[in-house]
Image 1 (cartoon, rainbow, N blue to C red):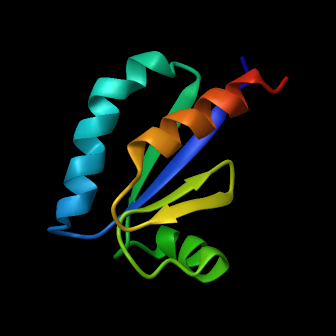
Image 2: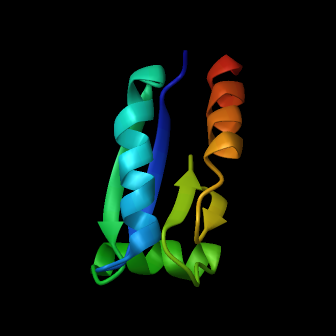
Image 3: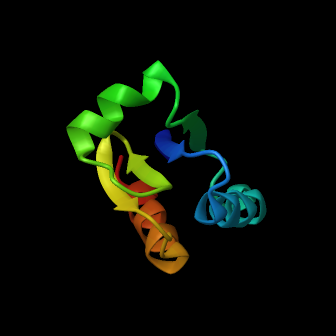
Length: 89
């Protein structure tokens, strides 16, 4: 399996961010090759992601530097996408 990077851009007090973090806590064992990095929208580190991917809602989810979603995360679609990416050598 190849290594995959998942970046979560979160904002303070974001309910959808907390829901996603809870989902990931339970799902991460299915994807040991996925590294999740959470970045606060308030951090200067978030600026390039916000500009490149036009993220206007939290959480912003970027997989291997490609935009996946913003706002409430479709966890079924995310699981499918990560599974498919895992098959690519």
